[in-house]
Length: 117
Image (cartoon, rainbow, N blue to C red; front, side):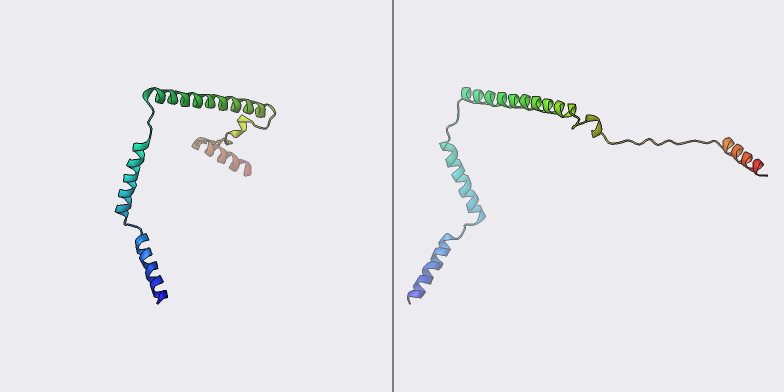
């Protein structure tokens, strides 16, 4: 008897812990999201502009620093011959074609037949 009561309690817990359908989950998500956004302390205009300018200045300084480091290392590697800018291009092949006219072909065949006889 005790075993039957325990198994009944387990099935009741499973029914309570079952996931709600997708619609209820989405409604719950957006309700929680809205409640969380109400708790956020938004910065005032002055603080927002100050933070934005700070981020932009740091990005520009990082870009300039990376450009300088890249240029210096590229110059050093190019100077010692490890990195050659000219060798990075794909090799090209030149195709030469010769155009012969009908008169040249006739003259060449006549010359070869007259010397053969």
